[in-house]
Image (cartoon, one colour):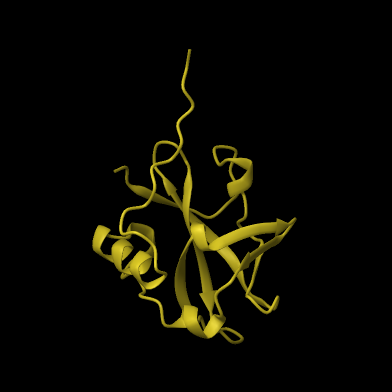
Length: 129
């Protein structure tokens, strides 16, 4: 499995559907709960697997950094990503020690919390003829 890299800008290497950094995340009640700060992507294919958000901050105080698997998110409009999870539930998710370098165990704990299989799905590769 390829390692993940932390991306903070919608760079050209990302697939168009994965260029959501700066978009706002909405919960199941259609309330804006956070801005998407970064994405964790495959180091070779730039396929996005996780979104990085910050929940619960106020004024100059940072809240909790939350890693969301893209399987629980959906781009619904320009600038808008939606999840069926509530902010309070996301606050209970496991937090990696270092967002820039998430370990396999941390990744497995996060995926388990959201009810997903422990292994992230393999990115689709375009076959060359």
